[in-house]
Structure formats: structure tokens, C-alpha cells
Image (cartoon, rainbow, N blue to C red):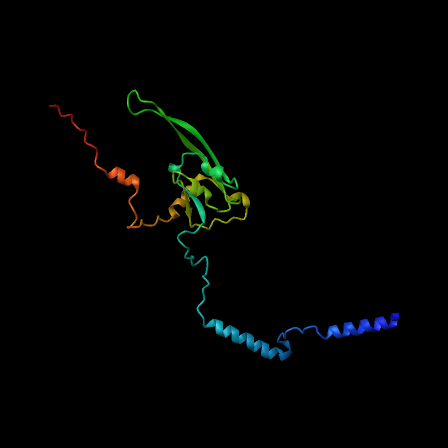
Length: 205
């Protein structure tokens, strides 16, 4: 086979393959601009009669679910600065400083006690990924989810909130749900409600 015949056969194969290319779907422009404009106006008329779900924020506040993860609030009097939340945080966005105070004994001859006092409790929400681990591991119920979400800032440095601001968000924390009436009584409550034991007297014959 000569080079000319090979080129001719290759050209026929390419030409035959070109006929198998699928055409693009019609865009609507071939029907004319007037028909496309009328179709768009018909779509607009149909949507105008439907009820919209868009809220005019910030004039209308959204109805958030009760378990919304907006921001983390702090109940400072429950915090013992145990550092458990800071150690478990995967982003290391919690900063806690504390000191020890001595509490004198209330009874004569008793031993003085020591307690941790929180000096600083801050959360950097530019690093926080809202996983909720700090809230789950807190053994003293000092951290809570608040549905508050309006704390955006144009400066990333303003997303580091101290304990004063975290405490202000506690007023937005919803009340816990009611306990199930059919649930068994907690062991602690059952033990506290038991009558005190009466000392047995030794009966001598």
C-alpha cells in the first residue's frame, strides 16, 4: 500500500467517525428571543404565586432547632479548671489559667481545703470546629451549647472570646428537656430519699 492510499483510507475513517458525533441539545435560541422571553416570564409568574420560605434576616429571626450549635457558653462557677476540656480539644483552641486558694476550715481543728479559681477561660472560635468534645467531657457541667450565632467579625483577632463574653451567652442556653416520666429513678436520688438507718439496740437477757 502506498503512502497516498494510506492517507486516503485514514481520511475516510476520520470522515466516517465525524458523522457519529452527537449533536448538542437545543439551547432555545433557535426558537427566537421572543419565545424565550415569554418562557422566562411564565416561570416568574408561577413562582410568584407560591409561598416563599425566605426570611428577611435580620428583621426576622430564624427558628433554630433546640440543639443548634451556635456558640459555647461558660458557667464559670461550675468550672474547677481541671483542664480536661483543654486536653481533649483537637484544635487546642481553649486557653485556661487558674490559681489555688485556701479555704479555712469551718470547724475547729479541721483541715483547710484548697480549690482552683479560674483566672482566664478563653475560646478562639477562629480555630474551633464545633465538635462539642469539650462540652461532652466536662465533668462539672460548666460548658453548654448556645444557639447564639450572631458573633461574626471582620477581624479574625476578635473571635477570641474571654470568660466574660462566654458567661454572657449563658442566658441564651435553652433549658434542658424534661425527664421521661417512665425512666427509672437515678441511683443518687433514690439513695438520698431513703430514710436514715436506725441504730439497733443490743437486747440483753
